[in-house]
Image (cartoon, rainbow, N blue to C red; front, side):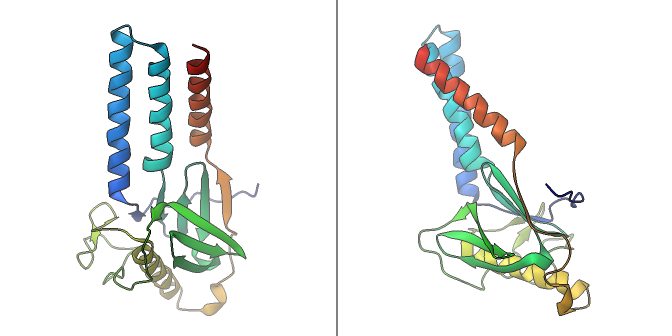
Length: 208
């Protein structure tokens, strides 16, 4: 695996908050239920099963997100992390999911989906994205979150605007596109560890 330099912290985080909140709610309920079962002498199978579902809820509903950095965009999927430098991002589009094309490879985000999404410029914000320090155009909230519902089309427009801002910062030279470090897809260690833990819980629940 090639060595990549450490990237800067996220400027903007794109995710569907309703999915994340639902996931967090499920996790809290499942953990409380598992604790109640354990304290009350309930079924060990129910305790282990609840904890396994809580882990799955975190991986599928809470962890996925897309972050915009000074160097590029990072797609955080349940088990994989894809880092795409701005100079290697060829296309970002929307459909059922938010999709990226980089170096002849297609990547999709589990974080932003929609049954009826369309390509829209309503996601654009006025002012800067990568270098903002205040809410921008009523769209970017403090902490780098997009206000309102995040659809694939809206997210794609914001990402394209961030890439154009990065390009302007380099003097608008078209030669920088396709140059620099390559896109990198790698397994996420914490997600893999949680998955192993979940599998152990499921096996123990089956044999309990």
